[in-house]
Image 1 (tube, rainbow, N blue to C red):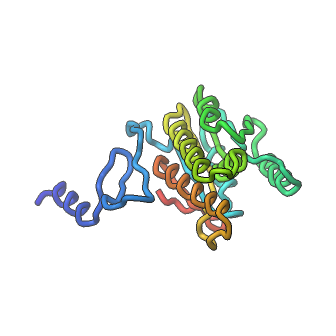
Image 2: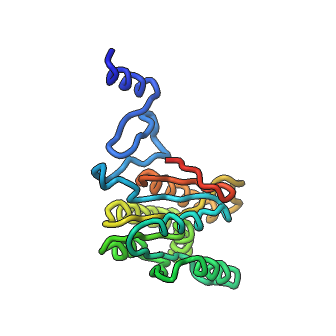
Image 3: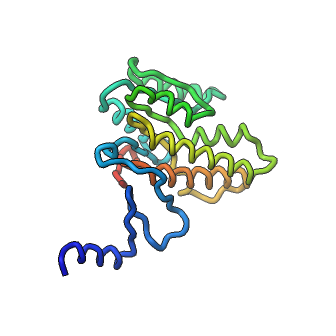
Length: 222
């Protein structure tokens, strides 16, 4: 048996099936998202980076460092709205950390179009963060028909993932891991948790690199 046959046999034994962009367990039905785009090897190099972690895990600061290391202009897409004093203080802290040369765009809707517009001429876009954006959309669309709202938001996440994948420049997306604690006590909170978890899977599946931040330490997952 030559080396290529051995590698093929080993992949079959491990239960993995190869795809053009990343690998998925061949037996998985749920929880993984197949890539809906292809890139050349050159195009694939760190074009999209997904950074996730818990609250105060250092994910935003790490994503900002990644953006500072890249060439060209940086556009920071902020998704948080200053709804109360605590959120205003958080937003002010993020603003203090950002270099003055960065352009800031505030979006609580239309994120896919915002990414496309910001990267029309190349450069880097940093989106902070996806879960706050999902929360904005969930609150804006209402709760009369929760399932319909979930489906609309998940379609929008598809559009965001597609915009990030096809961007001319680099995209760094920050998100939160919200499913590691207790099961929420009401249906709306559970809907948010589920939407965010599936959105994270979708973004991570399409990313060139994925980092999980734990206690201020970024751990490379992909």
